[in-house]
Length: 322
Image (tube, rainbow, N blue to C red; front, side, top):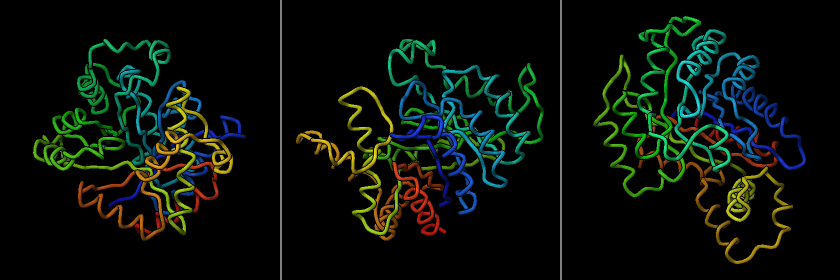
């Protein structure tokens, strides 16, 4: 499997939110030096724990500080944007950083009702995702009535961030698919991916390509790696209580809080689900995942409060899959 990295620009308790963006750029520079294939950034709106709401803007900064690593979005949430505007943004990036830019597309409508209203989206709005992808691709390939500029030689590659329904769209449109989150736990995952490969309709010279996005963290021991995973798991568990997905907190501060049995159970189940461990443990879990999915690429999405430990984890993972 090729190895890539997604950084969601997670905010950290005790640091200004804007520092998360600087940290993303710094992580990209290190990822390039470690030999990662791609570096992707995210789009989230109105989330205290995530500073990145404009992938194209952040990728421009990442591109200015790197030279070879591919850059991409994991992803641009297409329901929030006009396809022509997205095409123009990523054509500009591709002109600035030739041969390095990818465009991952998602369909999330936003985490909360106020965010959806601010984005002028409604849960009752028709699902036009597939049609919007086709329109966007027509701008990138210069087959649309309007020419998106700047004109570049090679089209920007598209990827579909998919749940079950998105897998079908990716197959029908002949696009690579990126899978993560609960869909990886589906008992019919093998059948889902077999259907994707079987029903794939090639577009130009495209072929089926499966990327698995996973919160992988590596440390010297399994226990140390579980502690690295705790801040992200805690943020998710705490959001069920508060309704707010917050900044990453230090492990010591999390451990100092009182947990009832329900919270403790949720934390332990969350930690069990994360491929966090020693190099040997992580290798075994990734080998099992590769057998289940036949994935072409791993998009590592792990994060933690301790940035030095995160950098060590990125280096260990790169060495593990070198």
